Image 1 (cartoon, rainbow, N blue to C red):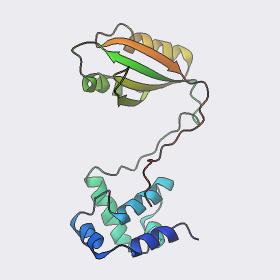
Image 2 (image 1 turned 90 degrees about the vertical axis):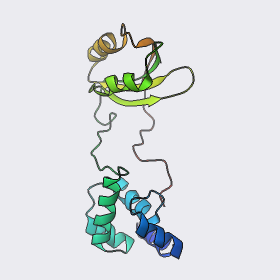
Image 3 (image 1 turned 60 degrees about the vertical axis):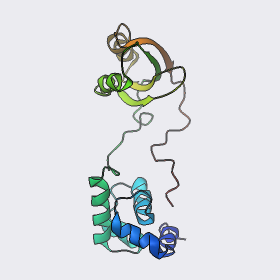
Image 4 (image 1 turned 120 degrees about the vertical axis):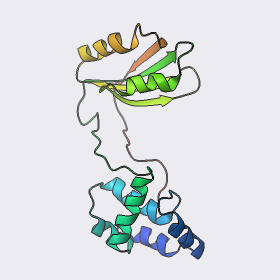
Length: 179
């Protein structure tokens, strides 16, 4: 079965209600055509709109309009992402941060997000307030980062550093079943 055959089949089977919804909000993540477009672009973000259209059995203009609507709505961004494992960074670590009293997670996250070594920040519940992934070119760069940006900062009460030993999976795609 061709890569797009399953996707085309699911779009063709959409009922009239879904077609009406697509006309109303072409940027909806619940729209089958949008999910199919995203699924193909996750495999190859540089895929030509004409190829996406052919795979899904719709016009190139429809794909161009849908992608434009999803981008404008903030639902879709097409970017290049470097895989830290493939880039062979020497240091990859996850930091568990407990924030100092009176400091908001969003403010600390904003400060850290501006740093090039920080690739991931998640506000969490439980033992930590923030989980922060850091990748560095070498061990000394990582130690400098910790000393400069984590230890002794007034907005961080404590931290736990968990260095990566071996990466078994690094998935950049969304977990949602788009088909």
